[in-house]
View 1 (cartoon, helix red, strand yellow):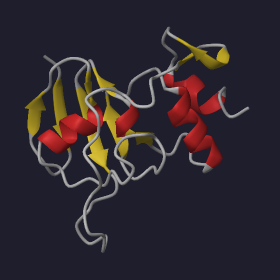
View 2 (view 1 turned 120 degrees about the vertical axis):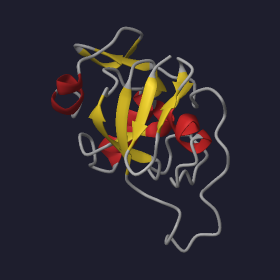
View 3 (view 1 turned 90 degrees about the vertical axis):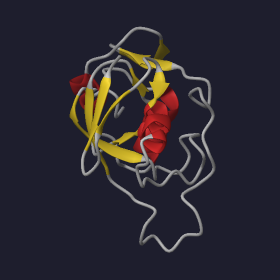
Length: 139
């Protein structure tokens, strides 16, 4: 099973294929997720220290491009834990002034994922290197 190291929290073992946002919530991490994991709000943002996925959903890419945030962070609701990862959650519920962190996300990535493929800024199901995510997909 992959291990997930979370800054200011503990290391946890995660079932392969688990949504990163779900793994963070299950580990008791104080992370915002205002839209419930639909790649609409960008509050579930994380910084990857190690183990960043080398593919991205179209929904994540489109949201980050629309907000001019591509390459700044990743959306934990759109990432799967399939390898050992080390992440730093960037927005917490505590001190946000909000009533709750957000609705619980579905067990699976929503909307249904279309994966970015190398050399194709639209969609597909093969993997893409992280350098290409920030360089090639801005167009």
